[in-house]
Length: 297
Image (cartoon, rainbow, N blue to C red; front, side, top):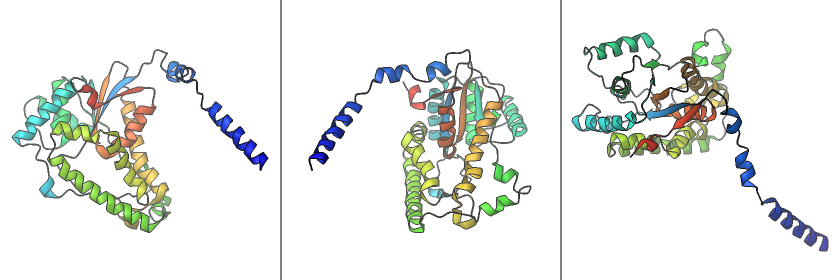
């Protein structure tokens, strides 16, 4: 008994001593002091997550038409101008949008510059083209891409087996979170109607929003709602070569445009892509993420 008492005192003393942390030494040892000390300084990037203005409803969650935001209404156009005023403070030099058709984007953008095209409802046009025009940019970059699983499904037959090789965790747990997320998205659609465009974009950029949106893929059987096979529950292998891979490829497409430290790049993509893209940009020493809220006056 005395031995146990002595041991508990010793452990308490050790714990107390171990909590004396030299934070100055830790802060002075930050890796950025090494990574950012050379000639290659980080490129500033603004990640602008968006809802799809045209409501194609191609994602797992389908917004009811009664909750559509009419971005072409006079009030919403005024709010878009307010959002544009904030974005202008970032002064983007390159703009990247959710399209894989560069010739089509080039053609349409040139027609718009020539006054022969009236902006369509899509956020690529309403925001991407408008911002690019205001900043007098010669081009808008189309960097969207399909994942490995789509590109090589015919060449590698084993890919098909991944859709039926799910590793379910717990069907009761999966169904619980699937129902919770359905309510989550429906509530979001209602909330959006009562917010201005700027407020909507600020809400979508909130860390909690991004974390919980990404959490849908993790909390209900590695859900891939856009893939109907196996009730959308493909497991980690399928999700990694479908969803994670697609976003890593998008990030790589941006890198291939060779942004420099003098550039200020803006990435305009559906907000579902932002958790993984933000992780890439935050982690890479090549970039410095600028938060939308920091542009507010």
